Length: 355
Image (cartoon, helix red, strand yellow):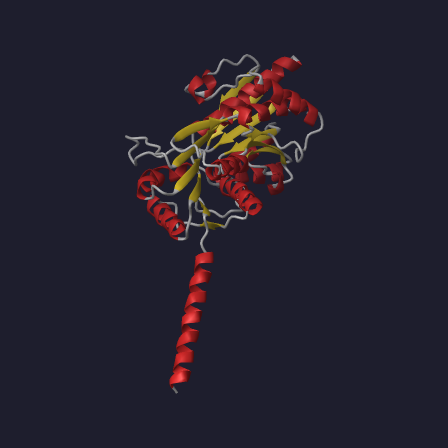
């Protein structure tokens, strides 16, 4: 009987040891906390996840994403805590909504590094901005991506354009100002007399019947292509385009799979930024404490010409355009150049702000 009990005890200990080993293998050193949505949202979550996943697979690193229950600082902080408990050494936070949460957790978890896209840590009342040595904060030169899209649209032959943005925050304004300056530059080079742009901020980043109705009315009154720039606002624009034989320019990631109406997208190379940041982390050169704005010189913005539905503006044209942008021959307008898009010094493009 004693031998049987001893044998049972030994087996139990062995199972415990095996279970412990199994749990240690279930840690994930690279993590991404989604901005409420999923990692296939065709936007920031997906772009960031693709960069993280690419690095992890190439370098045999464990990785996982965590999804908050709701879009609140408390939920973001709780979810980041789960990632840390799960073994995360580096956590990617895709979007400005993480700014306040990250302001807190950067000191709570000093041994964990963070990458935040499109934002930087600050207090809830914006009274203090602080980026600790374990945080790499990345912004993008959206005005360059918008410029490329506006230039391509006019070179393609479109002269009746629309810009439907979300909230009038710097990133969205940069896209819009860059878009009209790209259209202006192309119009000058083509010797056009006029290009018309309808311009509107919806006030949010969700799809609404109101946005769809407005976009539909633009198409019905002659607008040929609308730059949908504001998260799910683009879905409203796509729905309107599908019902009115219109065209759409997507934003942030390649949105051509979303609708046949998407002829082009103004990109932030989110996956490249995350991949490069993780590479630096493992190389021992993590740029913590830095707040940077990545642009064409970092291959951080661009147009996905391989999926573009264009006939006149070719990939060779795009490469020439990009080279000039890199050389500084073009300087797109950005949000700090004017309080309103109507105040930009445009001579050919006529902007109608729709309130």
